Amino acid sequence: MPARRLLVIGMVIVVAAALLLIYRNRRERPPALKKTDDLPQSLASEAVDGAKLNNNVSLDYSVGSLKVVDEILEQAHEAYVKDPTSVSVPSLSSTYGAYVGEVIRRNEQRARWGPEDTVLGERSRRLNWGATLRAYPFVWCRERILKGDSFSLWASYSEAKELASHGVL
Image 1 (cartoon, rainbow, N blue to C red):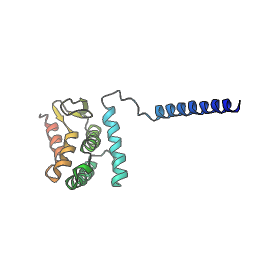
Image 2: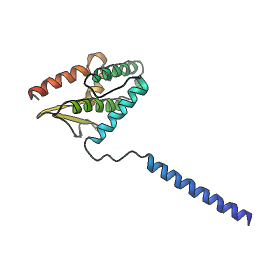
Image 3: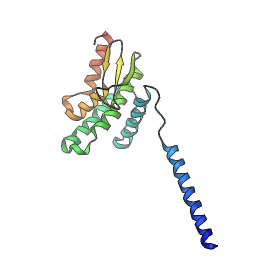
Image 4: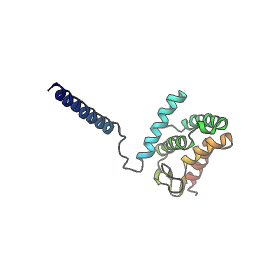
């Protein structure tokens, strides 16, 4: 009888642990992304958190914060030059590209996220800015990491803003 009782208690513990694991995994799963803006907004939040944690700076979605992102990506470039395997270019490009796009979307009335861009790959979005301009902040951030000072995130934003204000492609 005692061996049987131990077996039953052991089975109850195993089932309880399995249920707890299922509950925890379900609770920790990120929310489903349903709207076009959901993925960029989620990635932008990751950039804000990462900037605070890794660079001890606060990003506030202001246009001026793009200069801070430029500095963060310059540091990523320097690390990349020393050891390319030390920097996850796709991940940083996605998170900071989404942040840059969110800054533009939040500060420019005519800027909206487009659908996933099949040319640029998964987790990549273009920003439809005005009637005709298509901006690619994910690409801007990738180029900033790979090319350093020879590619300016701030200059890309400024040029796109100028083109958008004139309705030019």
